[in-house]
Structures are given as structure tokens and as C-alpha cells.
Length: 180
Ligand SMILES: [Mg+2]
Image (cartoon, rainbow, N blue to C red; front, side, top):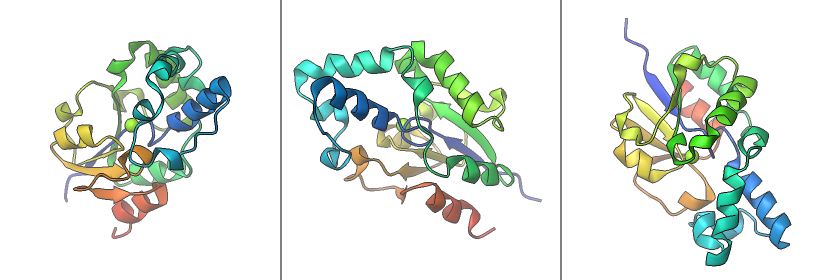
């Protein structure tokens, strides 16, 4: 019998809609109407005027940012199905914002209670992970990963090539469970 494969799953922009919350707060504060379409190929950080970068930083460092994030459509259902055939680890580059640890952990507990704490990894460089797949929206992390990187589509990575791409959770379901 073959060993179960390991899937590592990123959190922001893959399980949690952090960009949506960012745009909401940004548009409210500056009375703007920036949409995900406007960002095509750019991180929000590269899109906003230099003098407003501080505001973006302020949002993610605020205590309530990570706790209110919306779950990506169908992520719960598909991840639960994947769990029957694969070992699932959530891997989030939380080291960039250490103050987010608690909120992220609680968010996972609330929305993904079927993922045990032993399968949650707060890390920096995802090159350290040992897994067969990493589902992530950040090509920088995918390049460092030793298994196969699956690029989860996000406005910022619209122009990135060189990875198998998944547009949403049903696409992940088809790719990783379709042939079982
Ligand atoms: Mg991400």
C-alpha cells in the first residue's frame, strides 16, 4: 500500500480572503473603489501610492484583521474531502506578522476545526516543508518548496507562469481527487 501524500496549504488568499478585507478597509479609509481586477499582476502594496503603504501595514497589524476574514468558497468542504486521502498541513508565513499568531490560530479553529493543531505550521521560508504539494498564491514560496507547487490564482499572480495553476477550491478537488 502506498503512503499517503502530504499537501501543505497556505492560509492568506488560499483559505482566507485577506485581500478582500484589505480592499474593504482601504476603500473605506480613502474613499476609493479599488477592485481585484485593478490589481491584475500587482500586489496591493505595489498598487497603492507610496504614502498609503503605512495604512496597509496598519490594517494587518490591527488586532481584529485576521479574525474577521472570509473563508474562500468551498475551501472547507474540499479540504475535508482531501483529508480522507491525503495528510493536510496548513502552512502560513506568519513570521512576517508575529502578532497575528493568535488570531490566525483561532480563525483556523473556528472555520477548520477538523485540522488538528499538530497540522498547523507557522513558518517563514516554506522551503523547509516536506510535502508532495504546496498550494500557495505566492510564487516566491512555491519556488523554494521541494515538492510540486500549485499556484492558487490571485490578482497579484495573474501573470506568473511555470506552475500548475488552480483557480479555486473546486479546481483543487478535481486535480487532486478527480482520479482517485
Ligand atoms: Mg498566501
